[in-house]
Length: 481
Image (cartoon, rainbow, N blue to C red):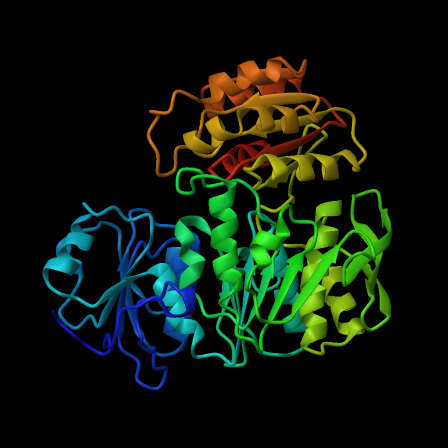
């Protein structure tokens, strides 16, 4: 095997940890890294950090985007096809995204030629070892918004953090910031157990619910995965966790680090009360820490009751890091979240248009509840289901969540990594929504959806596009005129 700068010393699962490599990424000896799938939101962020550290970066992606163009401006060499001749002999390490299939020509080539290689999650885990305090934000949903909140707090406190967010953070205009070596804040996704490769010292667990059932067998398997993640924290670290997670004892079993719980009452270490909303559904509330007796008021620039609880987690970490309440308040008051998280896109014909990444029933319920607090006539929801397996697993739950809208327009399923072989698609969801009595339409092209909206939405209505696929194109088209 071709061994370069990173040398494998052993393969084992140390302390229930999935990382197989004892390696280091030495910022003082930059090398050449090749990224297969460099245009992804996380992969592009890692590439940015490497470029800022002085590494030579190249990679491939099938699609040119603003993320890839930004990387090229920073010095990366990117190929918009995936053929074997792009991985040059001087490449020291190949990093590949989980979306890459084993039949991918570059994946086959790197193995045949013996290039040192690892997955995105393994690489991100190794990267954490270069920072004094790696901070991981995990949970079935809410990761990007919570990471955005804590990012703004760390920036406001002038801590010079390194950031890796799952969406574009408005204040920095991108999803990544290469900062100092004290704090590295990142999202930790449970899909394929990828977060078990990480080395956090502080972790947040926002929620533990059924999702990614194409990988996990059931909710017990998901709880087991989060439990293994929680136990990665060192005894000198910290776990901040939503105390209202069902069967939380299964998630916390064997965790040895200090734990801070948060929730909706003084049953928990940290909680919120006196919650009110303005006309745009932005909450104001009083933050309480019953351990210290500390209380202070917080106003958020994001919408919905769910974001009150997301912010509790961010504040709990910030106070643990001894960031002052007035700094936290100032940061959260201006933190508008990230792109595609209840993002106002504009208007057409007097109809306000919001776009949101929600693709799980719990997320949809929270988003539509927040929308209901905004003054409007009828609430329209354009929903693009994400993956056939998720649509099938939550068919009834999707229908119930979407019934909070006055009118629902369904787009075809965004397949992502899947094929239509599961016997469940948007037609089935349409039939399930009809059972709730909600006005619903299933239209098979974006053009048909746009035509329907132009004809039927009226001045004063509120329209939300929902989904983790490309449904945002509809919002953009509606508001571009």
